[in-house]
Length: 355
Figure 1 (cartoon, one colour):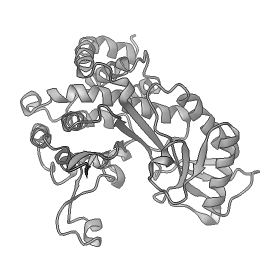
Figure 2: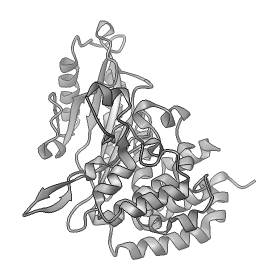
Figure 3: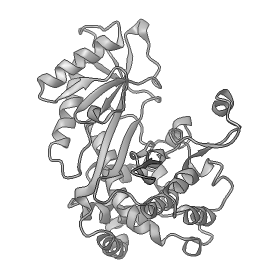
């Protein structure tokens, strides 16, 4: 009997070729400008025969020393400062969305990577070393509150354009149901990773109508952000903060585009300020999981930027299920091929477990 991966390759081969051609023509050499960052949220506690830490700061300093000893440059960012210099090496911050348990010396931390390129050859061994240290010197507790976030951006001379944002957004919506199958069901229902189609700009619309909304907004990158990340004024958060109208708030959705909101610079010109954040992956307790989420996000990004432009109300029609698993796999393989990968690594396991 054919394996799942072999069957998918056979079913999707013509789509892969089509996607690859489209992607290769989207940009002559996209790889050098694509960048990513990784945030790993973990609940850490002491080992039975190891030292306990009575404060988050004590644990963070201890972990920082162990990482440095292993040759991983890092620092403790106890103020959670978002300045650029904090993304030149790994950093350790306190993760407030993970309920710490001081009485048991359990602390929520977030490990934040530097800004990296898909061509980085030391990312995989560095990640393996980090998780080896975590499991050797601490107890890593699985927690439904933990997440693994991947930040995506393109550096100069070709940052994401409004057209890129629209293509990316439409692909996110079109492949949402299939992406959901790669994660625990809770990752499509939690407060911090809600469907982007629940936001007031898209709520109640068909998938084809959602495409039309994005197409109508793409002349302005900020319009795409609003279409994907509007948050209702009726929410408890909005009422607590005195909102009188819906506002953009992306950190509660699977895809957070708010880093792409532009800022006025140089006599009124506008440019993106940050990243697109993929917030759906759950917490990682082993290195292979975290690396798999990065591979998934990067391959999807390259594919989505090319394929999304073909998604319109006319092409989607009355299809409410969006892209199939076979289509998603084809998109990822094509994206990975453009990045120079001959395998999608742990992503293949994600698909196998989704069956």
